[in-house]
Length: 252
Ligand code: 13P
Image (cartoon, rainbow, N blue to C red; front, side):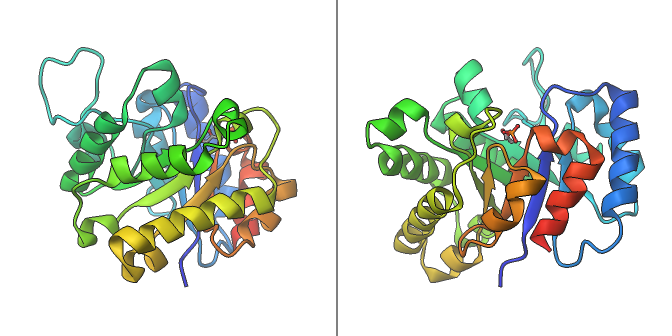
């Protein structure tokens, strides 16, 4: 059985003080009875320290939302794997569709970041997903599986086992238009078959596949009950302790 992974992606919300407050509220509400679920919160870089302090000793993990692939250098505005690691991060989100869409991040860069994250000992959450236009053109499989294979290129089995993949259809992010459990499960099942075909049953059966895109307390349980959905990557609903806690509970 795969252990569900529920991660909150706070995107560009909350200054350090607000983030610390939200983290403490999440600890208070999620702290008890989260059972066999791994919980992660991913605030902006500037709040990692404050949130890390609030989470210390609670079992809730800290993650970053992005990083560069080099450990240091003349890369103005960038943050390295080693830098996020020393704030207490154990996870990092890579290849989010907002990075791909607004910052022109490519599959090749996602692959470089993924290798760097693994070298640093971080647990990566790699995001994939099709746009509405691509879905309507019948290109879900080609786009999503293409992103998966490009991201995972050149990794060993031991490395693959440290990754989680998040399927986030772009049309469902921040729109309130969630994929139905059947739509989400269909793509998750395609991803798992692709993993089985290319990397074997060991990897395919172990790798956690999260769903993301307008997950709310009202739809979380049904999504997480699907055979190939192992938790979620939560945006808007992760910014309130009570809704995030309810989503974590739905994964228990
Ligand atoms: P929403 O939950 O706000 O749709 O965002 C999903 C997401 O992008 C998480 O990474």
